[in-house]
Amino acid sequence: MKRFFSFALLLIVAVADMQAQLLYKISGNGLKEPSYIIGTHHLAPASFADSVPGVQQALAETQQVYGELVLKEMMTPENVMKMTQAMMLPQDVTLTSLLTSDEQERLNIVMKDLLGYDLNTPMINRFMPAALSSQFTQSLYLKHHPNVNIQEQFDGYFQNKALEQGKGVFALETMDIQIKALFASQSLERQKEMLMCMVDHLDFQLQMLEALTDAFMHQDLEAMAKAMEEKMGSSCDSTPEEEAQLIYNRNANWLQQMPAIMQSKPTFFAVGAAHLVGDKGVLQLLRNAGYTIEGVR
Image 1 (cartoon, rainbow, N blue to C red):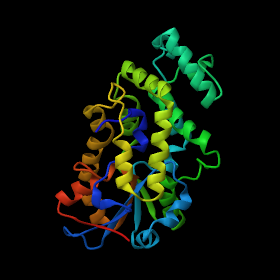
Image 2: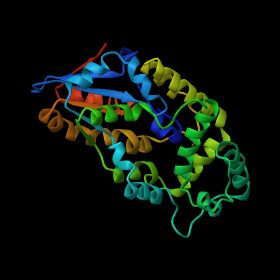
Image 3: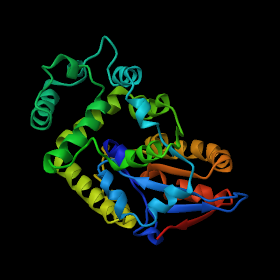
C-alpha cells in the first residue's frame, strides 16, 4: 500500500469485515478478565467517544489505560523541550540550505497561507522537514474546519477519564521511540522530498484528510482503507520500509508487552487506528497469539 508519509499520524488500513467498528474486546488465552482496545484519530473531538457503542462500559470494566504515550507527561517542560529539540535540524543546517531557491519560493507560499509566516522566521528555518510536514497536515485541516478544538481530542479522552477515576495511565512506548519514528527514520533528503510532495499536492492532501476523518466519524474502517489506497504513483508514495518503521515494527513491539499488561489488570488500550488492522495489525497479532477478538456493539 502506497501513501504520503506525511499522513503518518492519520494512516488507517482495514479489512472488509471491520466496517463500523472501532472498539474491540480481548479475551481468552488465560485472561481472567477481558481487556479492550480502541482505534483513535487525532482530528476527532473528545465528544466523539459518546458515539462509540460500549465504550463507557469498557472503561468501567477496566482498571488501567494504556496509550502510545502518556499524554500528560508529554506536557512537562522537560519533555516539551525534548520534543522541540528533536524537531530541529542540526546546528549547521537550515531549510534554506536544503532547498533550492525555487523550492523555497513554493514552500513559502504554502507556509504563509497555512501558518502565517515563512522561511524568513529564524526558528522555522531550523525545523526538520518532517516536523514541518506534520504542522502542515494539522493546519490544512484546521483551515477548512476552524471550529475544531485541537486541545480537546479523542486521543486524550480515555487517559483523562482514567485520571478522573483514579486509575493508572501508562504508555506502550517512550517518547524516544516516537521521536525516532517521526523525525529520525528518514534521511533529510527524503524528508525534504516528502515535504515538497505535500507543498505541490495540497489538494490531494486535503482530499485524503477529509475522506479519512469523515470515514472515522462514521466508524467505517473499510472506507478509510479505500481512501488510503489513493496514491500518486510516484516517489511521493511511502515505501514498505517507511511503513514498517512507522507502523508495523511498533505493533510487534507492543505485542511483546500486552500479554503481561493484560494479565496484571484488565486494561483499556487506546492507540492510533492505523495500528489495529491488516495482517500485521495489532488485532491480527493478538489473534495469532491465541486471544479472542470481538467487536463491541
